[in-house]
Image (cartoon, rainbow, N blue to C red; front, side):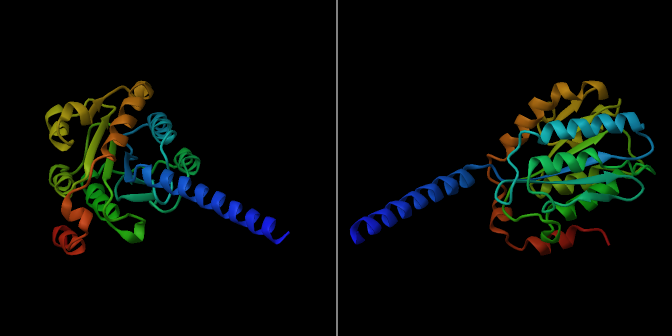
Length: 237
């Protein structure tokens, strides 16, 4: 009797360890990345256009593996002042992120994208906002093409810190300015599309984003060396 009890316990332990190994392997193989959506929420965007952008973002995140050891997402509004809709550590499932995007309210006001980009830089590297050291950072900026303040310098700061920048313009915009703002090569990181056709580019953009997470981040970012000091020296007073 004692023999069979011991054998049963041993088999149960082996099965538990085997399952744990499979789960750990699945977690380890999941792509990791911090994804920040920067949405033009200003008065230059109609309520209809904003609703279509929300649907588009929901499409993008629908097939992504969210979780503490996988993908995390945050959403920041562009307006007179930047506003965080949700932080990286606020939602741990794709469905929760989609639900939060679906109910996001348009902020209106001016289109101060440069100010929002400086704010986004802080959020992408702030542990208080749920950001993680050593994981690839991706910013997706959805805009109608215009900004009330300069976007070049703050966008360059983000790229210098290793952030991959994708831009989706639903307006006319300035091709040269937006090409310079997006990560290189621009033909892979910049999309001009009508707001009613956003769903067409969603699969391609999602693939580009997840492909970026398969690449290592910059060495100084992965090591976390003097990260806080580097950021503080670049933040505007």
